[in-house]
Image (cartoon, rainbow over all chains, first blue to last red; front, top):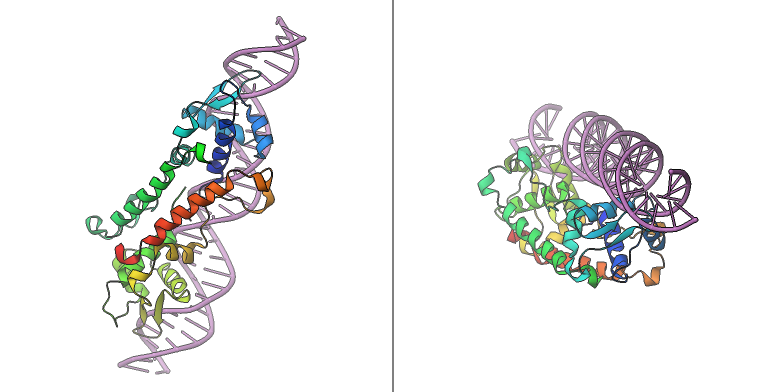
Length: 131
Length: 131
DNA sequence: CTAAACTCGGACCAGAACGGTCGCACATCG
DNA sequence: CGATGTGCGACCGTTCTGGTCCGAGTTTAG
């Protein structure tokens, strides 16, 4: 299907929003979701996930919120997708379900890996700052 | 998630197998699925879909089967994916569900479209013959 | 000290997508 | 005519995933 999940989509939107903040400012999940039109109950989850991956920093308590932990320029789309959707894989060649006939002669696996790497390259080259 | 569905995966494997055939030879769905380790009941479906899209030709009746309709070199992975999974889209920005705040200033849409185009480029450049 | 506003994390649910199966009609060849 | 194949639509069970809810811990304001 070659598509990114809604979670990743939301994550990108959120990071983009945070990247527009003043250096020492923070934005609460609620504010962010309202201003960006994201589901109010889902946004905290996405942000928490990004926080524990070290992409954003969170401050607790009243007047708390989120802000970017690193420069927007250094956060690649590939990284965001990896955090929110797990390690992306092009082909589900997993476990011996179909064994690919014989593993060593599975003549489709290696080319697909190349393809996958190329796609990941594209995603890695683009950062939040470029959105 | 950036992954292709199993259907597409099977389709690629099948096409790759057909590409190794002698010019006027045909392979039945059953034979193909057995020799490639694909689900016996699902393979005919995938091949039928590819047939009605004009990627393979089918001959009915006993001793019937499938063969490539065009040169392996001219069948891109993007085309196969499009046929089996429908038009791939990167972001589910569809219908006004989240309206992206204001459509014209949706500052994330256009960059994502670029990203999408780049990914599709990669898929379009690679053909069955290269698998 | 208390209350409010916020993050954090897990549990939970409903709906859609997907892989897979079955059954029947039609075509071809021996 | 019968065996073998394709073609196509209906159907089912499982998994994924978007989305909601709730309780707990934390910080600031009054």
